[in-house]
Image (tube, rainbow, N blue to C red):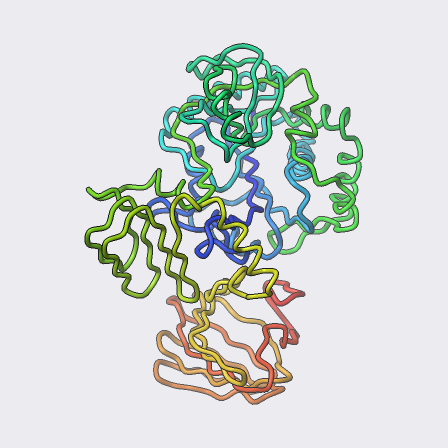
Length: 482
């Protein structure tokens, strides 16, 4: 019996969609297209009806582990494994780890699973056509072929790499063609040439293959990756619902994509044409292209009022945004950052984020809203010696038993019920009740009810950094400030 394991790569930062997408909460965890599911959730939902599908293996970084777990639980999916990368090493090491883990899962059943390798941040318009292509690719991969999907180009794109097939590609998604070579993102003149040649397709970054097939090719072309990945799995350990890889071994892997490591070298690589309304939502203009528009070509999200405005992407996360007499603009307003740019400059936003990070401005990486395994907190107002936060704790969840050396805290309950431990004393608080947490007091906040607990936290002290936390006990096994 065939078994299909989705391998979902969820380690990107999505910096071209700043300020909405940031390193602390990147685009794969956002609801960018529609309000039903995040991009990560959509990645699994669009394949969930495939026959013989197993739970996914999701690969992400440590900071996002609880976000991944929470978003999967909200669509009632129990992943086969959530693997935490200790360092960024591109797709080849990640896929190697996933293939080894997949084979190990079925080691007692003599099953060589098919790996369906997907990025967590893609958009697919025609789900039916996509599933048809997946079904065809599984059949091809069962014979030992390594399949990659080539998106049939709709324009001469410079933001994607290209795949050159040996023969001209047809729109029939059941006919594969041997891969001749891969081309990095071209300039516009080259892109126009590639667009006219029907042998070329966009590189989607999606692959289908048997676990043993990809591992055999990796062992032939990059044996050091396979050996280091075996070591980091052997020396890794389970932490709650997550698999932590050994950092020393994993860091020895070269920073290389699976395209370069295997698909450019192997004789078993085939490209399957895909025409399903695919987009990697790589920038704001890309999101504008795929989103619903009003009669004037505007994509509007949130608290926005427009007049005499055309062909713009307008999004406000909180405040009223009023737009008058505009054209071809992107305006993204969040609680702590505002982006105003011409749509033609979408590709340049990544460089702006780099400048923010060089200047050590926290807006480059961090949102005002910070997600934690127990819920989230949001900074409302702050100064040098005080800060006001809104804290929301999920039902049944609990913060760690902790202490601060430099600040005291005052909690006021707005909604729900709170269980509060201060040193050895335990109190229960309801709406409109409050409690003071003196500096250097051991304390823990818990939500004993079945509804969300919402409170305001007022911090005062000479240092208010998140690293001023000494943890004594934590149900989530955290050894860091995350």
